[in-house]
Image (cartoon, rainbow, N blue to C red):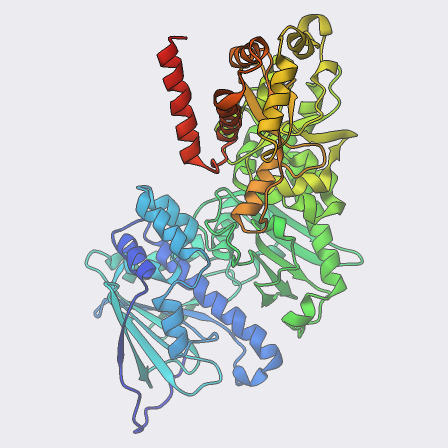
Length: 639
């Protein structure tokens, strides 16, 4: 690649800048030989060079002057054994001064800061960095100094970036840059001479970069040798592609280091013609839930890269997908703005979505243990489709898996329905922030006594899809924290004592008076006070009345400042609990027993229910005074 001739003009002064803090930490890990197979640095740099060529090819569709007639894209490797340098060059889009600073001095990726904090707290840095991908910075695994010379397509000024990876880098204008594109020169560390061996470079490129659709050329003296197949892998027959080649393409297109959990290679013919090569990662990308996350599926038209930010190509609830879709039906010069309103793209999206979900159904049926691992990584994302995509709701409900009160295995809704006891008409669930905490909820006591399985929902998205779904196979989804639950209809009445709560209430003299007293005392704090059918061990609990907002959803909305007031709840009382019996007896035996002691007891019952629900107490000081007073009275009386 020819360079621009030097001139006598004055060039801008060299600048010395510091790396972004996250980059500094990343470089420290990378430089300390994070990976045993250091050769992957070449894969990363070739992958970046390929992306640069793809971006220029797309830009030239509307600005042909950017290529200046040179449309033969290529990536060149050259080594100098005497100088101990290895160079990787491309004639792609190139970079100017700001691009070099932004792309090589910072990590402009969503969620980076949070990811690096996680990295600081864990010892398995290799696995975490593998989820993040190191890209250009992999060069510092083998180099003690890296020089990047680049000239952006359409611009005249070339720029040079130099760093030893130890905290700072310099940027300066230069005439010693490719006519267009980028040249990365690595000054190899002591002991890394293997990467100066042409035979070694051939093997690395063949292993990791054979799928690259742009020629990777090794320059030796007067001889140029193309090292890769230089054809789009997704256009080849499946029989011609090895598992290793598929995996390396995944590494390239996903900028990932793990192996894919699932791949789909398909070609659609007929009204619409397109080819897809898609992967589902084996591990969860670190920015999966970040609002500025990057799209994972690239769009090509007739093998020409169009966009890696085509959000309408697959739905948001499949954003964990990585790979490419290449279509014959869209115009090559389509703009990114036009893409989002294109009806052909909408049809491709619908067909690809059906294909992916069908493949997931097969895996769920044929390899349930593997599917559970997938669900652990991406189930919370897939559930977003339950309220975003009504057309696929039934399929998504079949794919969904849930923790329940019966054992540690996640189950499908179909499994849940098959295990329902006689008389159970609804699918019961309990939502919260933590599955283990949910298992200890007093709301589950009556259901456990009846042998009723309850879904335990701990993903924030659960509160949003349930109102949209409301029922499955004719059975209503119902929260156990709501009133109106009739457990008496469920199970064998002989064995389960269906009327136990009512019988216990009848056997507790003064219970009606106690309920009336508590209701009167707490009139401003609760909606109602009732006998509970769901409690067997706990004295009290709070429930949402029929038609009121679910309690966990209310907490979520308040945390995000989307709700400025709380609905009053129903306080349910367990008539069989010793504390409730004792309070009822006291009130029944002494009409003057109200007063301060019983009022304090009523408020303490409510505060206890709030604590069990994980809610903050509105007046902790008053709670402390009441508790201290009652304990003191008990100790004084010896009762």
